[in-house]
Image (cartoon, rainbow, N blue to C red; front, side):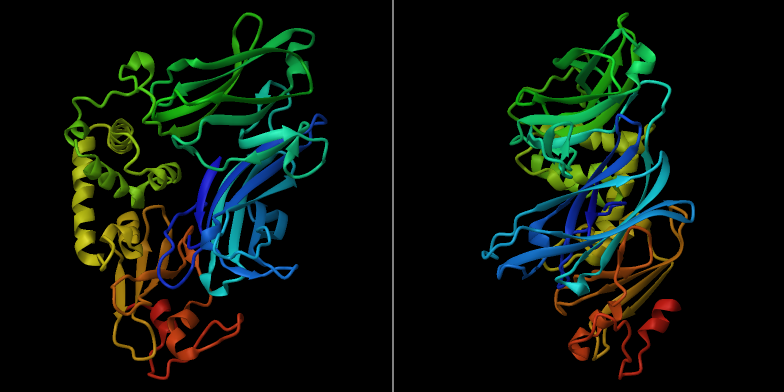
Length: 490
């Protein structure tokens, strides 16, 4: 599973753009669960930090280094089953103009079961950036009585290794790929999975493992992207596979892994979804070839690629995690067919009976948000207020303060009840530039949004001066009580 975090939040998850004076770390998280030959289960997290979104601090060898604190909890109900906290460090450097991404792999030994994974990230070199809390459900372990396929770890590269380390499994060192989007510049899809319990089911018989790529909408197998290998039964069968994707056209696909018996019967199957953008490959339009045809639909009437790209980007506030990953990755370089397919599938999934009407209704909301919240250099839907408005609807209460002489202009929004069932949730926005009307989300009590316990200190940053990392409140000399306004919006 791949999730996107913004430490201003991703991961679930999850994605806000770093703007304003608060530098918000951006990260991508993927994870997978595996079993040992002895049957012990473990869970791995693959966390990629975007280097240009975090600050440098002094390293240990006179150079400079980024430091992100990662806190992890695994819970069952109200019971904490495992807790971990560690610092994820970039490579030390003397050149602070080039901030490379850095990745960390963490392995957790856990009994089989369903857990709530809570993950929090903080930039240790930028305390006022706040923290992001992610809460998602994960499953660890597999059935012990039938053939099972593990989660998939997608891979950038791999090489033989006899070392025992976080990046190694089954005799290979593997660098994880944490995204579900493969651009035209990426030629290969590599992955690692494991097959379990074949000794119990097949005993002395042979079995085959077939993996292939299929169209995600039609589930049509692409015969040019298929591989099958025969194995003898074993306690664990590691599969390190992949495809050259230079001829894979743009679209939404599944990587499918199956276990097949001697009678060619599929015993078990797993699917792992991904997007591909590849204008260089010739797209196939018929369902026979596994590609959804948008000809004749309302989307086909949008012929300008610039318009199509802008329309798709407007979907971001209401998109799922995977869809947001795709939207963040696309550009004018991507082919029109890919954008049209994504556009159509986005709305057919939400309103199968009338996707065009639903899109037009949403478009009216975007137009209204652009009027309400546009800035000198952003459209309204691209701002924090616009994103929150489109994602959650209009707030039940909106308290605005624009003339306080000792604080930045700010707004406090309260939602009595949100679409996902959360109640009494608040959002604090502030305008640090004092000139652009770009109100930045500073703090929220909603699940998956940025949480900054020092939001009042940031709000009064012009007045309060330096403050300790433990100071969370400030007495407004003008008599305003921001905490009261936050607790009791009027």
